[in-house]
Amino acid sequence: MRFTLIRSTITHSLIGWILIGLIAGWLTGKITRGAGFGCIANVILGLIGALLGGWIFSALGLWGGGFIYSLAAATVGAVVLVSAARFLFGSTK
Image (cartoon, rainbow, N blue to C red; front, side, top):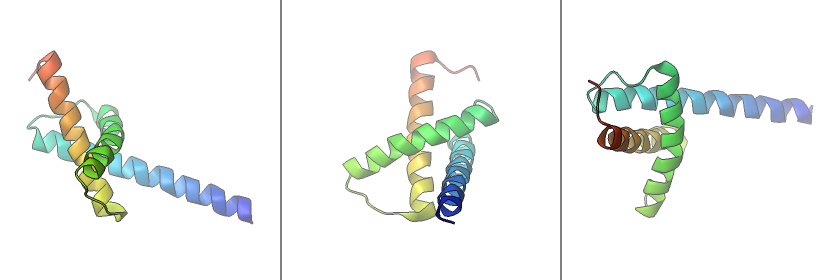
């Protein structure tokens, strides 16, 4: 019973992270006025952006939890990543 509960929690967490990454990647494409880098790359940028955004938010003293906070942190982090990538490597669009 306990193993099933842990496995279920991990599965739901993974699905939640992917959902947040997907939404944050899509939002980043809209915010930075581009089509993004494709579905998989947008999810990856959203997930990496979540880590970067969490660090940025904690450095600014912004604390919170839940879906909205995670989505905001992931989106801010992904926007920073995309902006830095476009600055360093140039935009193709």
